Image 1 (tube, rainbow, N blue to C red):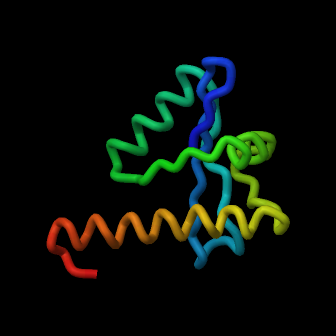
Image 2 (image 1 turned 90 degrees about the horizontal axis):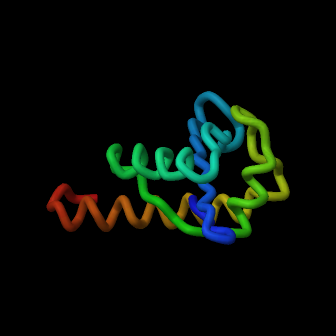
Amino acid sequence: MTQKTQGIKKAVALKYAPDISAAPKLIAKGKGRLAESIMEKARENGVPIQEDPSLVEVLSKLDLDQEIPPELYKLVAEVLTFIYRSDQKAKQWRGEGG
């Protein structure tokens, strides 16, 4: 996820492994060049990027490797739904089925 504030880009990355943790965890965060690097890695690995400035602002206050708090579950679920749908559409476009 990304946010651009006064010309400085911010980015956060979440990882969700339901077999390991109860909620998604913040695995990367940064601003400026670090944010650009996070987004570049996401693109290189086929990870969908969604821009949501308010959610990035809130998530950037968390510590690395911290699970998101319950009050953010709904917002993060919306992002995960977006990612799931994007992934399914990409698979259909590539002819991989779904």
